[in-house]
Length: 194
Image (cartoon, rainbow, N blue to C red; front, side, top):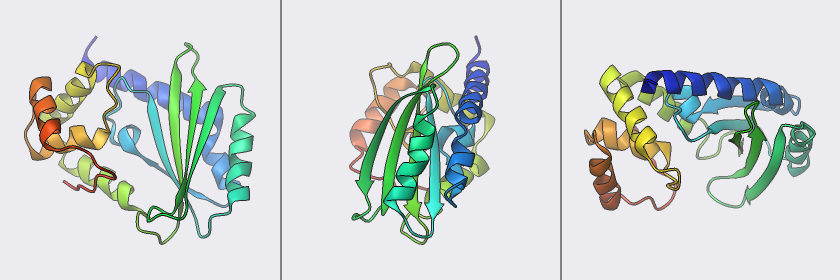
């Protein structure tokens, strides 16, 4: 099957998960603004079944955040949920991670980062996704999807690493990508814009 076909099929599966879990209306029910970020937004979703949302409220109420996740947890597709409280860091957020099973028995990870409006990363990653979409060409899209496809299942690589390597450094092969990663180790939040 063609790389673009695989990516398209995975995009469709991801949207079915989003709809079946009602993630967007659940967060909106607590007054949150919900923004899609990451590879689903950019159309660069490949093998790693990951869906990313940034969820914004003017103030973060732990009880409201937990209420939203309790409603999500009631869905039988949801198999596991994790929470990381980063409210007292520069990130000013609560990280929620949920694992949901699709109709084919595959698990999808849904990352929902509950962010306080006006904090450091308010809108930042939406801007990153928009910039990637603005500079993406047919060649770079294909190169990114190929690298993601060639990545072993055991490797955990952030999407931004692929984008920076391909768009900024001209990386096209997995061997080049491995070498590029050795020279550019990730030490936290990657703040790169194309």
